[in-house]
Length: 265
Image (cartoon, rainbow, N blue to C red; front, side):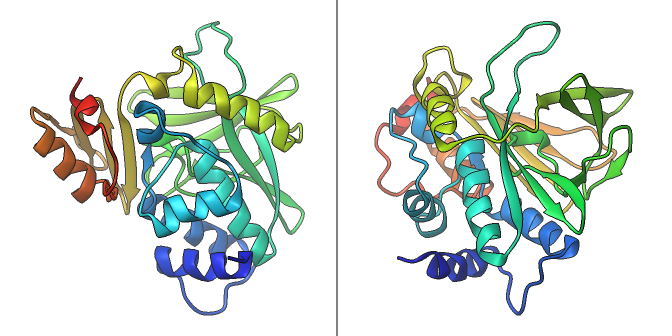
């Protein structure tokens, strides 16, 4: 299947029609609909299934197959579609570890999109606190999205992304502007998808944002976030309950997946 057919299928899947321009409102609409449509999830690494990065595999897994993925899958699918629409993008890698002086490898893939002389950070693969709008690459500027506020800070040769939460600015990740080759991505993705030390092989994670609501799943703990309110939380106690939440809340097609009993481990 050609990339133009991919684009038509992708736009139909996220519910965008008509003539699309290479401008900021179109980019924001695509980003928000992408995040609402394709859930962040790590079922493949958790179930011992491969995660590939070629365009056909990503399209058939996510657009045709009704699945989601993590940053490599989410942002590469988005990058492929933006390129078909004429957007200028660059692939970057960031450090999304625990912080606090702990240094981790660059295993978080994000996009830099260049529009009318201005660069924007675009990310659809950061899980529960993923930015739901493009962010100007302008240090110190507080930027609003349909959900939280964000800011970028400059430090040496990197930028840090932070999110505004009640009473604090929380660090999400650092990234540099160095262009990455596919070989760099393959190495980082292989570690993320297969290493016993990767959080994606050790427990179920899922997230989706739609409108001003966020849904997150961390192993058996489900949370629903509404602006300015305490999150609704509940524990999932059975495989049937887990499968219902994954299907209904996160909109993940579970057909054909084997070994789902591992999700309750």
